[in-house]
Image 1 (cartoon, rainbow, N blue to C red):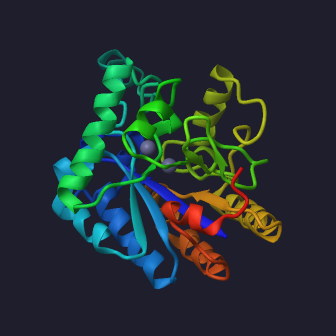
Image 2 (spheres, rainbow, N blue to C red; image 1 turned 30 degrees about the vertical axis):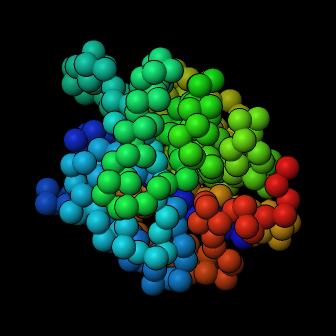
Length: 283
Ligand SMILES: [Zn+2]
Ligand SMILES: [Zn+2]
């Protein structure tokens, strides 16, 4: 069983990758709309985590996604942990893209406000109460799950663990389904993630073990992903896949994504909020 997931961000966040959208009239949200059409055509389901500001600032463009029965919307922080001013200036001077988000949610109160604002704007625009969440950049702290649980979130997917086969219940009572196969953005050479950029990252950070050690061409990455999906599926696990619409677009304009959708269509796909119903192995 597969849970296909992705994240989408507002244009005003100006993440590095948005600079690689060729057509100035195009946007990350428009790309996500086209991606969802492909998901629907392949008969798959998708959980899309969205920043609150996307709905605030780009609602009319985003709206068709919320009409799709194939898609469940989850929260992805309100503002996407924007980089501070200094980091942005530094990036301008050096010409090097810096990491595109902050690594902290700030205080308990600040984080609670961010989570509440996200849930509220999604309910205001779509009329739906979300139960699924993934933090932007997978950034979480000791307060995150407690706040999410109190706010009515039930499903969380913000860790990477290739050894995890089944969803688990956290001590706060959330159902956590780790991304348990190779994720896209951090493992594919694409957009600003050139070989030079990745080497620089490796020098500065401690990328010593899987799943954060290596990057690949999109074709190589897809082969690894297919193998992992098939193995975990054969073992009876829940496979949570992370494929961002924008990464699939900037890598090769969905060519590989389309092939992967065809491959995925041999399996059952579920949305995050279907997990409890579908899994007897919850621990
Ligand atoms: Zn994100
Ligand atoms: Zn990417």
